[in-house]
View: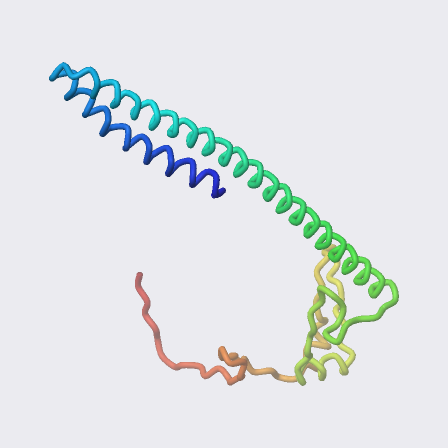
Length: 182
């Protein structure tokens, strides 16, 4: 808040409150019929009213200056925000161009190319891969399957269950009947 605004508002408020005292004196003098006291009270009232109006004008000027400063501050903040957005956009474009350049050159970061995942093949999978297993397409469909003769060459794999920690364990089959009703 601008100093003129504060000074103007407090001055106008104070002079308005001070105006009430001579007004009471004026009313009392009118009831008694004392013209001299009435005139003096009216003089004080005019002085206080004039000062209150002066302070009101000062407060209005201060508010105009406050509004002007706020508009300038808003303009500066807006310009800073626009400049920051431009810098962010240029930085993003540079990252995109760098990623495209790496993709074209075939270079990757230490974690692989952007947007790719890594895959680790288990020992069983490596054995199957090394054994020359390739899918054979079924007739008339787009599905792939392993032929019966090659299926016999597959090592016998037992079911494995993985825990939340990533450890594996064999599935233990339970003997007996389980009844479940919902």
